[in-house]
Amino acid sequence: MAENPPSPPPSPPPSPSSGDDASSADAAASSAEDAASRSAPSAGGPDQDGPAGPAFPEGVPCWIDVQLPDLEAGKRFYGGLFGWTFREAYGSSVWACLDGAPVAALVRKWDGRMPTVWTVYFATPDTAALAGRIRAAGGQVIVPPTPVGHLGVMALTSDPEGAVFGLWQAGTHAGFGKRHEPGCFTWSQLYTRDTAAADAFYASLFHDALFGPGAVPDFGRAPIEDVFPAEMPPHFLVHFCVENARAAIETVGRLGGRVQVPPFEASYGRVAVVTDNQGASFALLQR
Image (cartoon, rainbow, N blue to C red; front, side, top):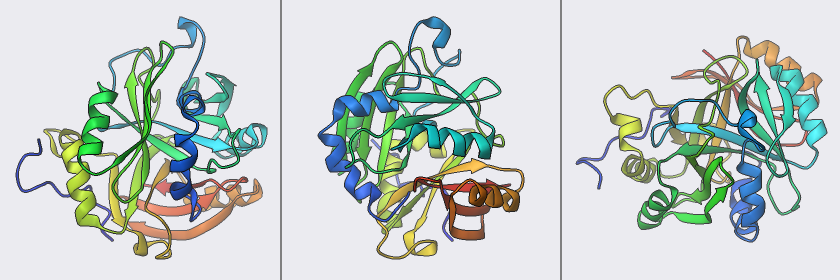
C-alpha cells in the first residue's frame, strides 16, 4: 500500500458510505450557516473556550466532527467505545471530551441531504488565503470562510477529485486538547484515484507540515482500490487510536456498529474500518 504522505514536488511549491463525500458538496453549499454551526467545537464564555496555547501549524489536522441524525444515539455509541463524555457546544453540536479535554464534535444533522460522515479540519492562519490557493490548484470551496463567534473561522473545501475536508483558523479554540492517545484522533488517510495528482495538490498546500524540518505528518494517501471497491468516491478516513483493535471491533459490534473492512496491516499500524450505529465510517488504528 502507498500509505505514505504525499510525495514532495520536484521544486518548492508557490468515509464513508459510497456516496457521502460526493453528495456533501451540493448539500453543504446550500447550507453554509448550518455548516458553520456544525464545525464549531464550543460555545459560551471564556470558561468554554478551547485549549490554551498557540494554534496548530498550517496543514496539521486540528479538529474533527461527525454529522449524525441522532445525537443521543451517537453519544451512547462513542461514549461506550472510547469513554468520551459530552457537553453542549456551539449551534447544533455537542463537544466530545476525554479526561476533560476536547477531542471531537458530534453534530445533529438537520438536513437529510447531508451525509452521515466524519470530517477532518486542517489548521491555517488564514482561511481566506488558503481557500484561494485551493481554488487556484483546482479544488472547490463548498462553504466559504465563515466566522464562528470568538472561536475561529471555518471553511469546507474539496480537492480536485472531490475529497471533502475542512479548514480551521483558530480564535480562542485551537483544536484538539488530546490526540495520538487511545480514544483520540491519530491519523487521517486520503483514499484517492490519482495519487500523483493528490501528491501535487496537498504538497503545494501543506508543504511545511508534510516535508518541513521536524515534520511528523498526521495524514497520508493511498489508492482507493487498496482497501475499498473501485466505485467508492475519493475521501478522507479519520482514524482513532486504540490499544487493542480486536477488543475495539467487538465493542463496535456490541454497540450496533459493523466492520466495513477487516483488520489489515498498513505502514502506520494495524487498521480496521468500521461504521458507527448510524452509518458514519471511521478507522481503528492500533500501533
